[in-house]
Length: 336
Image 1 (cartoon, rainbow, N blue to C red):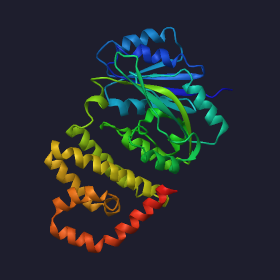
Image 2 (cartoon, rainbow, N blue to C red):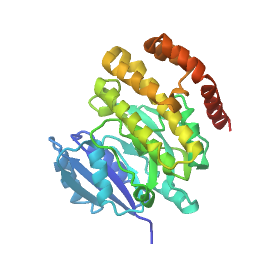
Image 3 (cartoon, rainbow, N blue to C red):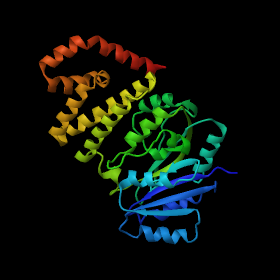
Image 4 (cartoon, rainbow, N blue to C red):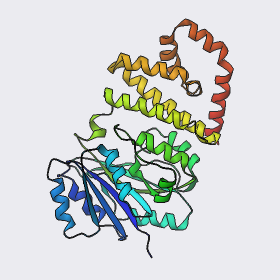
């Protein structure tokens, strides 16, 4: 019996794109799939288009709910999913016809929790595709090694949850769901998934096509005050998560990622909200394990400048050697 794959598609006001998305999904060369489309309170003709599509495609299941946002829609999809493998596709994007079959082959040949693949980006109304290659070597990796290598990349192109296929049992066992009420929910979900995972299979193929368009959440809200506040919430959530029973090497990688997020919020909040800027600095100063991983130039520019002379004296003498030792641990981990 073939493995059933569930593809979860959150739908909200995408009448111009939903048919392209569905056509790419149902063009898969692996046909044992169920597609759960969650109509998340759309006010345009998205639901009508879904209903019409379902008349000639029995593998499409439509769930309608009041608007809960992207995370809420994905969680609803997880609640209704029957497949052994879970894939997320945003409703304005498309996928390659071999995405499901390539992932299935990986799960069959290796005892893994997650499959990772690459993606291309195209601007709305253009056919030009810009490839984004994560440049993590192909094959089966320990998840902490993948997490380490991903953090060394120049961009955060490894973060979106739609760049992975997951074992449904892995998600359920670890109670992995999306945090509702925030944007950039993948910044929280993906590091947690990689921390829980044991092994991951990395494919070099470009199997996902991301549409960059005005009006989308990620396009319009990257550096707004709401976005930065949500990032700070994510930071605090990851700090809480790091207190779980996690082996040291995974905990250090998580702390390193948290440090990167602090740098992002502090750099961008400085010109957007002085209150949020100072709030984030105050939060960072309390996180000694993360503070030790902040780059020296950034540390001097923001932390020492804002916290004053006495903090510089105390931090210089009390935390000087622990800070060096901790950075050496991280450096050793990343050099392996």
